[in-house]
Length: 66
Image (cartoon, rainbow, N blue to C red):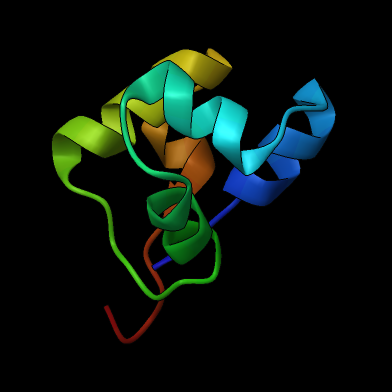
């Protein structure tokens, strides 16, 4: 699964820590999501999308092999 979390953070000019604090996870979780090492739960994906005021589909996309 690919995502645009890093891009969305850059648009809002916020750090991984600021996003993590806003949605109640660790900075390492945000880092792992951005690097593709961790696929967030549905609840976490929805929280991220809500924070950025975007649909989950615009932030998280399935890849061919998913």
